[in-house]
Amino acid sequence: MTMRLTYFILCAAAVLAVSLVSPTAQAQSADALIQQGLDLRRQQRDAEALQHFQDAYNLNHSAQALAQIALAEQALGNYVEAEVHLQQALAVRGDAWIEARRPQLTQAAQQIGAQLGTVELSGGVPGAQVYVNGIERGTLPAAARIRLRAGSAVIEIRAQGYVPVQRSVMVAAGGTARESIQLIPAAGGQVQVQAQGGPVVQPQPRYTGYQQPQTRYEEQANLRLFWAGLPVFLAPFLITGVTGYIAHAGSSTDDLAPMGFIPVAGPFIYIDTADVDFTVGMLALSGIAQAAGIVLMVLGFTTTREVEVRASLGDGPQAPTLTFLPAAGPEYVGGSLALNHF
Image (cartoon, rainbow, N blue to C red; front, side, top):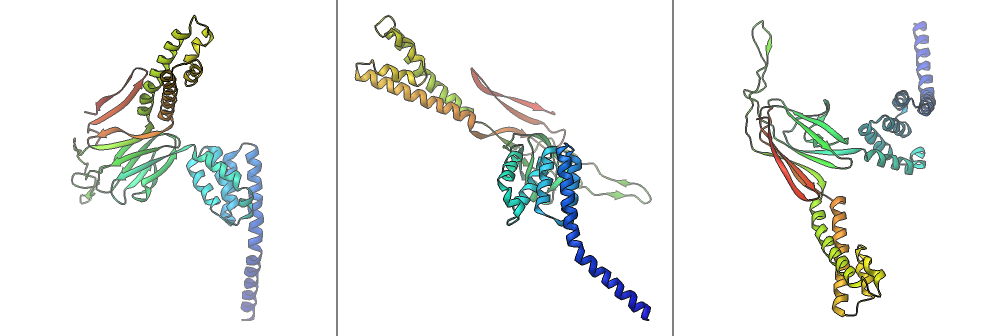
């Protein structure tokens, strides 16, 4: 009886000692892992460094370790994970290490975000699984907004009792692509039937060729503004330049002849030599119109608008796909239609 009591007391004391020492030892071990990870980063061994940072985070769940995980993921090109982890680290308030480096970490978050785009999904059914390039990213409706690396990606939607839908999307850095999803019930459902003593049979769904048209929208440069601004600028520019050259060539103001071909400023240069109020007014109007045209053309490339780029008639692989491809060139604006998978 005495031996058992002694053994129990020794075990309790050991547990108490471990519980008192463990937090300090874990903190020291986590700091050591972070330092080892930083040394590996300096050697450009980012994958090994990431593992050290993850081990450190598993020990004490510190914001510093989480931030180092994000920075290592950024170096490896894992921008989606890096954005999530760095946002979580920056959300921690009062951490001395984070606060001292918040401006640098915020800048890193902006650099990471510049490598990503967004896909917004509408439609589908609740609980449908969302896959991006074969990797599950959650279920609808929670996964209706997905961050992913800019470029092309394959989005797949799966739901029990429905025909899977797969789409190829192109996402611009900092841009948003929108996909409208319509899941078609599978013929006979996705029910597994097993014969007595036989193998499991999965009925194959039949695809319907035509369904309600689905639309897809993407943000593209607002070229309508560019083409609207081009004549607004070009007409007064040419009229002022040609008439001004003719009026001044061979006269005492011959040196001003080519000045009319200076965009925006040309008309105002001619105003000094104009002696008729009407001419002064027309020259001022020409300069203002040129400036407005240039502003419209610049906005055409710096602003975006939603453009419908595809209408899918059905979701099955045999269903036809109607594709609209907008096109613009120096002398035309238009597009083309293509009917595929028919």
